[in-house]
Amino acid sequence: METTKKSQVANKIFYTILALLIIGSVGATFYKIVVQKNYQIVAETSCDPETEKCFSYTDEESLEVSYYKLISKNAASIYACEQTEDKLGCDEELTCLENEQNCDYTYCDPDNLAEGEVCGE
Image (cartoon, rainbow, N blue to C red; front, side, top):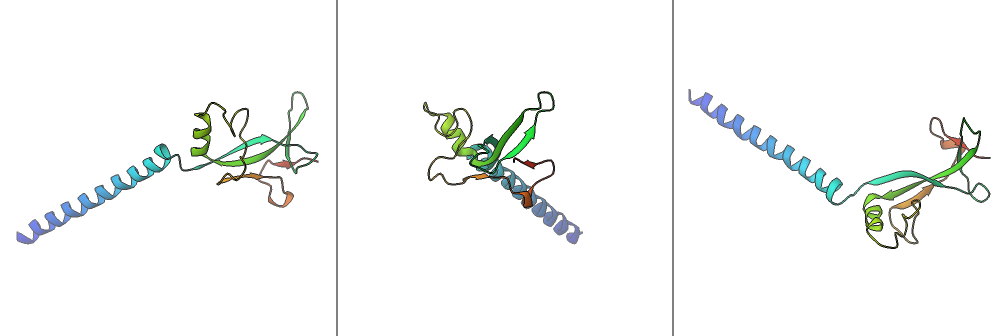
């Protein structure tokens, strides 16, 4: 009987530690994503095909060709610029500010196209 009691105590300790680890992991992830906004956002932004290597797509209704590049920007910096009056870097569309960390553009490269992507001419 004593072995069964020890086994029950060991099981309670194990499951308590497991539950605390799960709660801690979920809490840390929540803090990182929701509070700190520590993740990257990838979006389309305008591109000038005359000076840049742009992705393109054609609107099937109007047959108009649109050009874009991809921007990868930290969500915390987007949130910060939306809170300011000047909205530098996020007014009309997302842009990378000079010397901004964790912000870069992806231009079209025929060797690295994802499914459905096309480079402009």
